[in-house]
Length: 52
Image 1 (cartoon, one colour):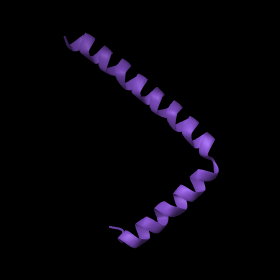
Image 2 (image 1 turned 135 degrees about the vertical axis):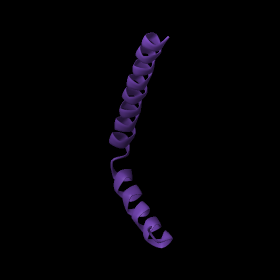
Image 3 (image 1 turned 60 degrees about the horizontal axis):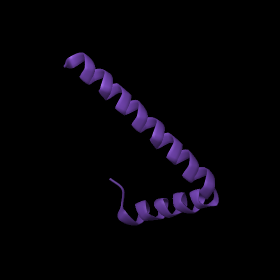
Image 4 (image 1 turned 30 degrees about the vertical axis):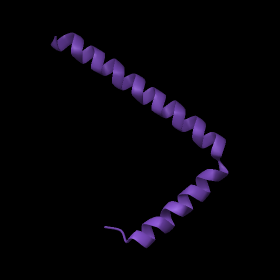
């Protein structure tokens, strides 16, 4: 397990890195999550259709 200080320092680095690409980050995360949710929903619909 990581030490809390190490983990926080690492998180700060990631956050500062990502904040430089704020628009890209926000956009890609939104797209990624939307696709993931859509795929998961489609799969669950198919699964329910075949099971029930």
